[in-house]
Length: 226
View 1: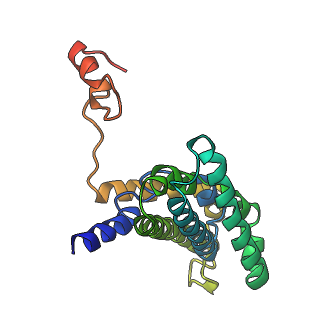
View 2 (view 1 turned 90 degrees about the horizontal axis):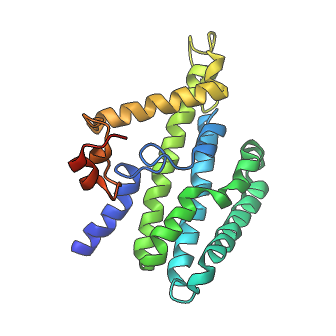
């Protein structure tokens, strides 16, 4: 029971608590580039999830075999192999989506979400836990891209998943499907997520309020400001 609960937590953390896009702010390039339509967001999210799941499983399975000195090149080769595979599959079965994603599909190879999970989690945990971690992070990434794409498509084009939206279709705000609209939409969604999580900024900006500062205690004691 405890193990099942733990695996469930590995999945749920990537969806909410450690959402790679809305909380950890990773994978910004595809998030901003391909989310002009909701379907593009789903496609990129699922493609990334496929690569993330495959690479996490392989890295975890080979974690005791891959020499530490060459682990980074090994991880890149593993990730690139799955990216090539998903590229072939999309080009063969969903060519329209393949064309829409363009070069950003290939750039999944250097997506910091995938490499980060391989380095920080899969290389240190068993295959099952690594697979759950990949599923959670992939779902969280896909949901974030779908939400981004939906907002931008509805407001910027007056459509959603190819269907015309009354009123919005006749008066689209084209800026939302442009780069500036992507930044604005992402910022607003992140602000809403932070509000729902009741995350408040520190009362004082100093080393003492930084969780990652190794000298936080010393700085706070001496009253040093950043």
